[in-house]
Image (cartoon, rainbow, N blue to C red; front, top):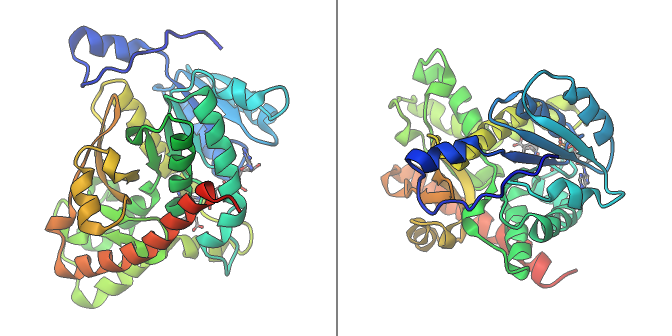
Length: 353
Ligand code: NAD
Ligand code: LMR
């Protein structure tokens, strides 16, 4: 991999010469769990993106093949694949700007995301330990479930290593937003459902997921008798896919789309160009504007729309104030579930089983 100049990430949005310099820098993306159902199509989308200069693929299996295959695509990104042997994780992570983690087992019918904790908690902990050691400044995007617990695990691992920057740690909840955009289409009348902006807040499992349709832009009218079913479909959209795949896993292709949408946004922000404000699961007390939301909800980790900048999360937007009474009640329910999930993640690192 070519030695790129390591950037001093500017403290404010780069302008003029600074912006040009940021845009010209090489940006290295890493996918940890790159050979999996999400990892492969996500790596494909990243390889095809003109915004990605270098791509490192790490997994416990099959990365040489996946990397060889993708490397034949005529796009700019230079590509390398790594396995755990021969310091693979160290080599993959060194110099990383953005690390995306879709490593870990997916659900089967009858399982909750929390049922994945036993296996995935340890996987995420190990990978984030590697990030703390080899790429402590990287932006970390966590897809592995249960996101409500794996993000707190990541935060605790980074804290223990003395390198936690809450502005650089994101739980990827974009799939919930993508689903909300899609499922509401029949009421929004938008030909392209992605044109709607719908904040989805809370966490990433069942009733911790709260779509705020009252704040949709453009505004939309959902018939009162259809509202509960629509909210339920967004909250349990993952189950729909798990059931349809019938034992072969959970959402992979829609997740790769959503993960790429969020990752691309992060890269744009890093490069100092315009990025969209998207909901993401962050450690609120460490993000500007987040304290008030943490106080209002009573939880430290929560998904809200976050403005991104070259330093990462630049501002957490308190959309909750504008939510309808009905939505505020859904948030109350979400917070209850979230508290337990967050505590479980924190405890896993602080009091190892
Ligand atoms: P998968 O089993 O197809 O792929 C997982 C990959 O992780 C495999 O290639 C496996 O070898 C790899 N892996 C396992 N342990 C590893 C380790 N220690 N280091 C590196 N790689 C490792 O599963 P999938 O369908 O791609 O799902 C991956 C995870 O993403 C699951 O936990 C799933 O629940 C979650 N997910 C999250 C969202 C979300 O919205 N955040 C959406 C869909 C799926
Ligand atoms: C999803 O929302 O599709 C993912 O979290 C995967 C799952 O287990 O449902």
